[in-house]
Image (cartoon, rainbow, N blue to C red; front, top):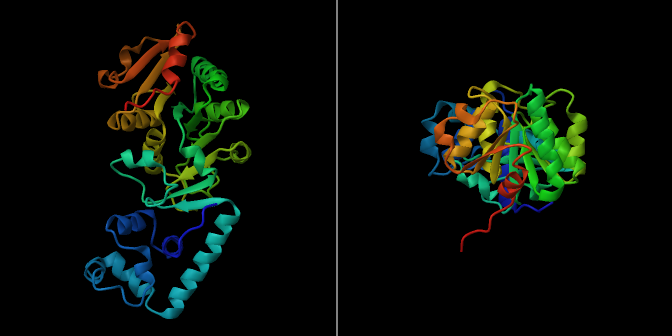
Length: 313
C-alpha cells in the first residue's frame, strides 16, 4: 500500500472525522471539497484568512466550526478518525484523492468527478484496459445467455471487467471474470462497509482474492438510495474503456450508465440473440461509436470489437 505524505494523510483523517459529525454527510463534505476548502481547515483553531469569509457565510460550515470550537472536540474527532483510518487500512481499504497517482485517470473524464474514492483490494485493477458490462437485475433467459457467453470469451480477451455487484447480470459478469482468473471491479452504490446487496459477502471475498477491487465514492457506512445508484452509474461508465449493456431497458438503472457513457464518448457494444427483438428500440443518438452484433453468429466481429485498439500517435 502506497504511503501517504503527511499532508495527504491529514486530509484523509479530516475527511473521516467530518463524516462522524452528526448532520454532516456525503453532500456536505463533497461541497466542502468543491469549494476548495481543505478538510483540515475545520480542525485548525485559525481557519486562515482565505477561508474564514467562506465558512462564516455558510450556515452549515459555521455549525461545523462551532461544533469543533474546543481543543477537546477537535482531538476527540481526530482520535476517532485515526481509529477508523487504521481499521480501513487493516481491511486493505484505501482512501484515494484526485491528486494522487493511484486515482484512476479515467475518472477525470467526468463532469462530476468524485472528490475521493474508497478502494478495497487491488487499486491497479482500475488502471488497465477494461469493459463495463452491466444489465438487468432480473434478466431473461436470453440475457443470462448473453452474459454467460461474454464470460466464456473473457479467457481469450484478457481484460478487466467493471460491474455493479447487483444480482442478475452484474453478478454473472463478476463470477465469469473470477472463473477466467481475471480481475473484476465492483462499483458500489453504498459505503465500502455497507452490507449491500445482502448475501454478496462471499462474492466480495472472491473478487478481492482474485486480484479485483471494490470501489465507491460514498462514505464508509452510507446506505443505499435510488439517487446513490444513479450517481454510482457514472463511475461504472467512466472506468470502462468500452461499455457493454448486456440486457436493459430505456427506463432502467443500466440506461443511466449508457447515458453517462455516451456523454463521455465511450464506445459501446449492443448485442442480442436471434430470438430477441431487433435494435430499433435503441435511441439513434447511441449509434455513434457503437457496434451492434447478433450472437453467436457474429462472434468474430464481437471479439474484435472488444480487443483494445492502438492509441493514435
